[in-house]
Length: 119
Image 1 (cartoon, one colour):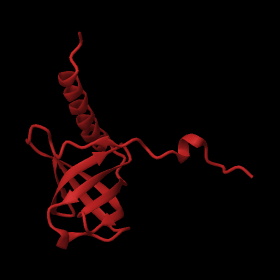
Image 2 (cartoon, one colour; image 1 turned 180 degrees about the vertical axis):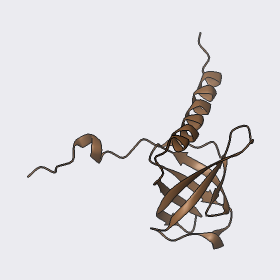
Image 3 (cartoon, one colour; image 1 turned 30 degrees about the vertical axis):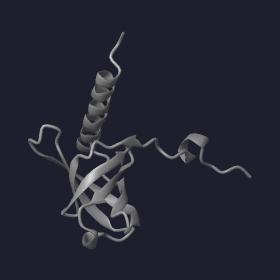
Image 4 (tube, rainbow, N blue to C red; image 1 turned 90 degrees about the vertical axis):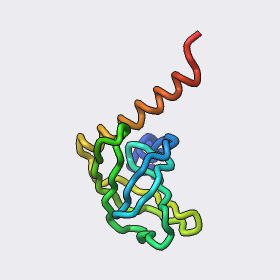
């Protein structure tokens, strides 16, 4: 019997490389590793502050021009204690979350244009 979910729903969202933007995850300093519209990968500065898988955390993303923060809610999906890395799934589907992620996408596009200017 076929699963009720479509192939598209079963696919893992594409992950975009992070720009090492400064984050706070559960109040702890971290760097952005990668992101999608479903969540982010982050590396914490201190291994002693690793949350547990399944734990709800607040994620604060520093704005590109460093003039403020965007606050998002996430759930820890996986933890790699050796690398101090977390996979976080967003629970906040607000316009604020989308705006923060679109800012990351805009930066990625700007970088690509600089690396590969039109002929």
